[in-house]
Length: 317
Image (cartoon, rainbow, N blue to C red; front, side, top):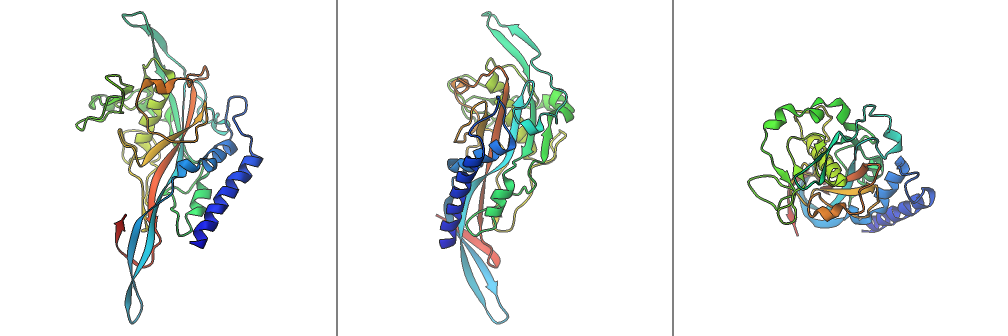
C-alpha cells in the first residue's frame, strides 16, 4: 500500500509539473500535443480509480502449491483522441494529415422555413499521446495498462476511407437512431422525449442535425464504433488487442453503453469530466463555434490484478 500511495503522489506531482510548464489553454483556437497530455493528466475524475475485488492465483514450486491473492482494480485510460471537423482539426500537429477537407455541403429548408444543414464531418482517431505515461503507471501493482502501446498512431483517417463518404453496404443496415430513449431491440443513443440526434447507420460523415456540435459528436461516435471493432467494412487500423493475463480490456464503443467508453471534450472547450453521447440537444449549447471543429479524448475502462501464478478466478466486491 505504501507503493500505491507513492504512485498517487507521483501522479499528482506530474500533473502539477505539467501545469506549470504547459499553457493553460488552447493557443489561437487550437490545441498542441502538450495541451492534450496536460488535459489527460489533470483530469483525475476521468481516471476514476477504484478497487473491484480480489484475484486468486495458483503458485507452485517443486514441492508444493499455494493460493496467492492480489487486488483487482479498475480505472479509465485515455486510449484515443477523436477529431471531428468540417474544415480543419483543432490539433496543430495533425493538421496536415488530412489534405482533403470539404466543409458543409448545402443548406435546405423544411416546411417551417427553418434552415437544416446538410453537413459532412471528417474524423481522425489517433492513439493518445499520453499513453506512455499511463502504461508506465500500469507497470505497478495497482494500475492497469492499455492494450495500445504506440502514441500518436493513426487508427482512422476519414479521407482514406471511401465508405466514410459513400457508405455503400452500410446503407442496408437497420436505421438505428442516436438520441431516442433506450430500446433493447435496436441501438439508440439516449435522448429526451421523442427527439433524436442522428442515425447510427450508415456510419459515415454525413449529418443533418440543426446543431453542428451534435453532427460532430455523431460522426465521432460512429468512427469510434468502427475502430474499436475488428473486420468492419471500412479502411482503418483497429484499436483492439489484448493486455496481459491479469487484465480485462474494455468492450467496443456501443450505443447506450455507459461504462467502458467515455468522451472528454478538449475543444472548443476543455471539460474536466467524461460522458457518453446522447441526451437532450441542450448539450450543444455554447459549443457551436464558427470553426466547426471539435476534439475529444476517448477514455476506456480497464480492470486488472497483479499476476502471481496461474489464474484461478476472482471475487468482485
